[in-house]
Length: 186
Image (cartoon, rainbow, N blue to C red; front, side):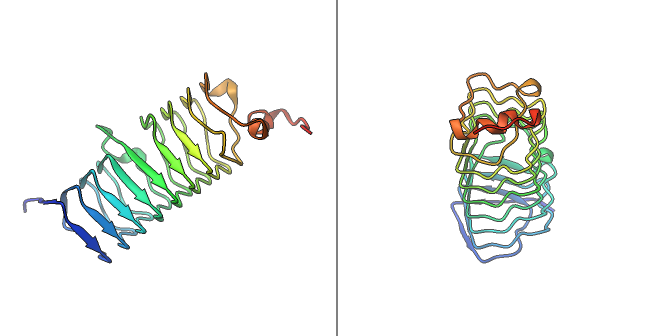
């Protein structure tokens, strides 16, 4: 069975998509939670107020995709097609997701919940974490050069095990860089 190709279409409140390529499509209030989206291709698409929690993303292509006010709990972005992987997250819940070893330079995370997200060994050069909650997010051997954490909070990043050259932090967030030393900052 051939995969479908869909371009310039808006989907509203659907809970199933045929396997295929979606180019410049908009998905509004769709529920794809726990669905198998493996081998799907999404290019220049917008997901608005959708739920993709625990969806399977094996070799899924996300190129220039925007997620706005979406529920994306427990997603394994590290299993996506790495070629051209690029997205933007605005107002999303991404708790318990994984970006392990992904190359997602200059990704914007804005007003997102990123609790217990795995960013280990990812390339987040130039990424922006604008007003994001990073409680218990894992940063280990992560490339964070020129990343912007100035308005992020609740992170714990160890400079010795991550590359943070020219990354930006607020004076209030500096404690997130020193947490492992068990010192008191007043």
